[in-house]
Length: 308
Length: 271
Image (cartoon, rainbow over all chains, first blue to last red; front, top):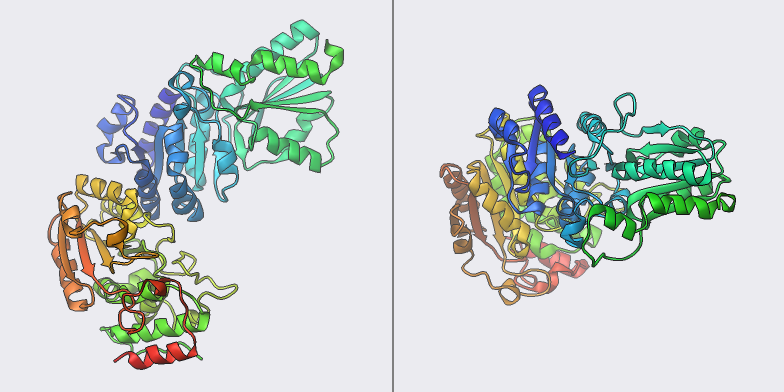
């Protein structure tokens, strides 16, 4: 996904002279094309993320469209007050991109994990929160975010994510039904999408149940109405995200569903309340936190005893 | 009571602004008297160096004035009123229910560039504005940031200074209101940064130290900085509570508000 980000931001810079990329000394060779073609439109702000976010707000104030890029925890919690005050409060058109979100850097340890960003940013007014799942969705959401002129946080994966056919270019607020099914609905947020698709296969094979898989690319703004038509007829809903259960998409969905009187069992899968002290691959970490395909299948089995 | 309007002229008198600030603080029973009194000549020098009409009209090539020490709001609003950027009538609502004039500067007030109050933000935003202006072809348009000497304990200030020098943002001028007192005590007792000018000089920016209660000295330093070819830091030595005898140099006047007697005493004490 980060390669797609680099090529898309370069294309956007070529089209729109207002687009400028800020990096916190991250992106080795990734932005060589952008830097070569538009040397003034790439600013390496150094290992100083709090300042970088304030600089982005100042650039936005001058009529530019800054896009800030670094590893997720350093473009979120490291500079949270600058995001809250200088960007969100001022409705500055800054797009904040966190690379290697969720557990993409599982083997680098919890300093590089990002399992709190949805929760934090959901609570901050004016911010859009988006989570593409592959390169095409990243490209379309990035464009939409810059064009929207609204402060936007986008968490992206790392590299090697497989594209998932999902039709028309994705807009902020839209969801995509990527697999049809009638018994179970899985709502998968951002980069966890492949686990949901794998789970759908397992549930079909093991339990004989068909799964509808809906990919969620936007955490905020949230609309239950956009999802309601996709929930009709199913016997249970499972949400899954590479994020803490606390404050995540699932919690938001379940609260909205309860308040609207939706009569469906809902299971929300997300990381439990713990820093991971073991080293492992992203797959290993997903299993550790119970958000991999096996965990999704197990959740369906628990929700529907008949499936056993 | 209405906020006193001084005679409008090209030259704004510091004590006229001080009277306006005292009126605002007395009416609202608001705090931060000390910090508002120390920065007044700095603000007069800055707004005197820029085209205030462009600021009022939000012109793309307006000078950017960012008050990073956001608790200096009353003096900022008062100075802006004296320069005709906002109407004096607006000051009547300072710090009151439903008003946009909070106790920290807010961009909800027309002409205020950036909301602050959380310290250590304004200089970074000013750096971004300076880069942005340069990239839009307005490289001679100055960007000012007013910071407090307590505020520079925030690490983001030094991050911003490093990048400003690296990019050689010669249109950027930081003015440090060096009133030597932060929230509860003397800044020297909290973290001793003396001699402050040398700290900044170490980053190879233009730096100088001036009497922060001399509008002429601050104005001249601004011009020297803008002509230096480097981003500048002007250390303005000031007195917290300047002009109000019972508040000068007293940390408690970061918090205390004026009663009837003290207000009268303060007004009468202004020469």
